[in-house]
Length: 174
Image (cartoon, rainbow, N blue to C red; front, side, top):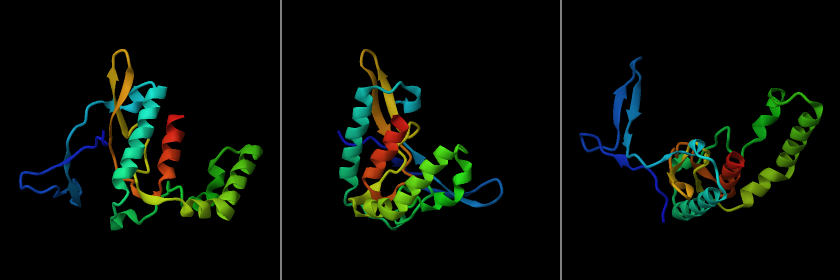
């Protein structure tokens, strides 16, 4: 039970991070984390059971993060599903086929008119925001297939509708 995540390990000076200079002399923060068993999901064939484990883990993670607050979570990113209106000015990077362009324009028009407001009314909390095959770990269990063994990379976390994690994971695991 719970959600297996790496722990931040202390430095020699008993701190959780240190400041160092990179090759160009710029200050950088560095830290060390514990290892979790397994390999990223892109090394495993997805099974119905594994996808079910991802959903169950997501529910446990959302429950654990329900009351978590931090000022750094009050932000937006280009891949924030609640702030996708910026895409409208970049339609030229998508498929040039007129039917596809029309479909994208129609979806973005709906998003602007109704979708974004609907998202903002859904339950909001701290979410992972990047549950893809490179941020989920699994171990191979002979005779059972892969089993979920951990979640990594909370660097894109933000305060957003819970359902965004489900949408992101679903898009990657479909």
